[in-house]
Length: 205
Image (cartoon, rainbow, N blue to C red; front, side):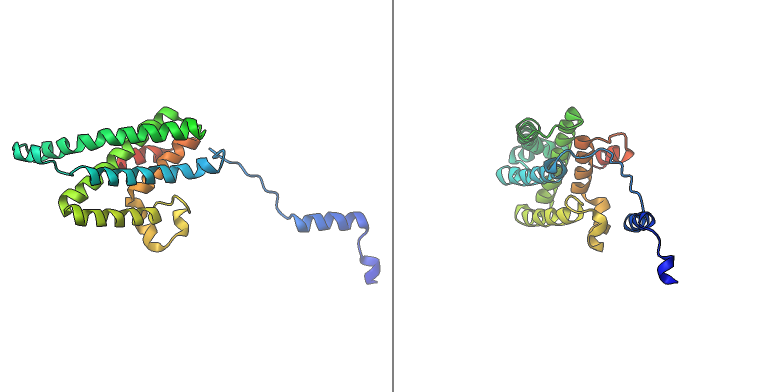
């Protein structure tokens, strides 16, 4: 009786197909990264800008002597010390942008926006590191800056989604400057600036 109940070959093949593929998958990708480099550039470029800002304040004093001796106010003293470093940072961004966009074929969805955002990232990192060196002293400031970089790398979500990282990294992510830089760069390289989070990155930096 059991043999008589075995379905015929056409039904068997249909059943096997249904069991092997029980769900039909329709995937839609928004703002896809065209290649591996475009996927990692939003992480490595801001990290390079942070390291570049670290090196700038190794070459230049975070608070110049001349403005202090000239009796300038605190804000003017900070800005007078900031601008020489900012000029070097702009040159750094220009070189990085040209190499990535034209030398390596990054082909960003919003090239002008990307360049402007890179300038903003570099300016923010430069100010942050200047503050650490000026407030804590150059020796301690450099050590803390390295520590800040390490924490930012883990909490930024640049390599792995932040939701898959440790709880501490997830807690720090909302105040991680590198994380905002990575998110903004992703949207400018691959597209998606109509997302309000793109403007949130600008506001935070």
